Amino acid sequence: MRRERQHGLSAEQKAEIWQRWKAGESLHEIGRAFDKDHGSIQFLLSKHGGIAPAVRRRSQRTLTLAEREDISRGIASGSSIREIARGLERPASTVSREVARHGGRLMYRASEADQRAWSSALRPKTCWLADHRKLSLLVASKLILDWSPEQISG
Image: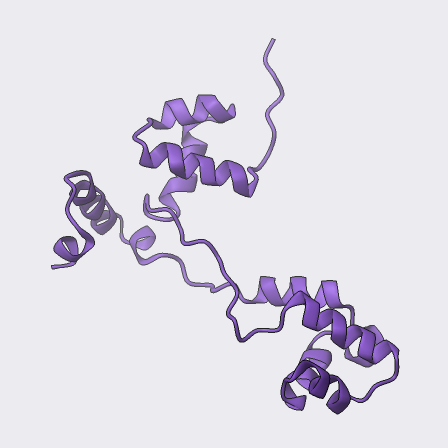
């Protein structure tokens, strides 16, 4: 009897797929390990040109969840935007734009604002290698031959 397949992959599973691909496992082997069709694995890998995407990181200049929670508490206590900004050691305009962007004083919620900010920070651009199949195949073949990125770009 066949197990029911789960839909979608977690971030940990995707990371493991990239590790297995980099270690040289075939699409079929990876697919069997995750109970997925090899075509699904190929689709995931080809979206990024066969090269693992960089791990997303937040810029150090963006507001953190802790700062957003301080903003939320400041709003709840009736503090002015300038007082909240002074406590965070941030410009008042930064705090004002943050509050306005995420519902205003009445609707601002720190966790929702943080999640929306993280989602809206995604770049709509796809990897250049993913859009140019011939180039991605060329780059992948040179990487297999242990060429350095500098040699490949030259």
